Length: 256
Image 1: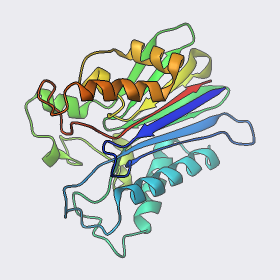
Image 2: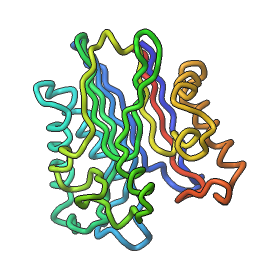
Image 3: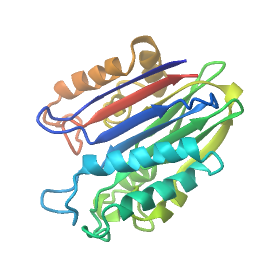
Image 4: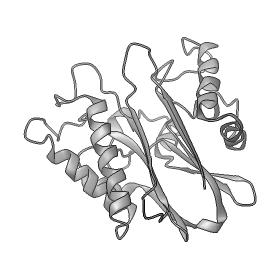
């Protein structure tokens, strides 16, 4: 089995707000991965005394532990429990009802000898490479659909008719894109925060097939370097408008 991961902050003087971890239980019963992309609130807002990295570390750690230890629970139930556990850690000190309380996108994958189970919430991406070749992207495309309709995205976060992220409401797990694939049909998988997927989703320079080929050949660090080179060519976001000229970028590759 091959597992590689890499991450870089969007700015050198700030922390990377992403989280990624992979677990291979000693039982040998498959494994699990969790990738989160923390949502950066505007300065002075959020109603929480804790940082986004604090939140993603606790939510990601809880989700990974539950994904491994509670194989009797679906990933949606694991995410609900992880959100509740994280909310309990700071509900006495922070306003968890604030619309900008710390939150994150989620990709979670769990596999064993029989199947690969996945969960995707918001705009991080999961790529599944078939045993016979070919790459399938598993995406929660709500944000893209809202933008295509010309709607402002930010006010529609975690609202009916909008898009959803993992914050303090455990019920949000029911909004995730989920599925199961026979293990024999999956040769490898990769998870990318939207910052690592920009060569496809923002710049249109690559597609998911070429992205996976780069990951397999040179690893996640090479993919992030590819994204940074495209950002460097348009540092102000003039040719390719985007919310941030540079974004945190994290990727993980697992060859099963």
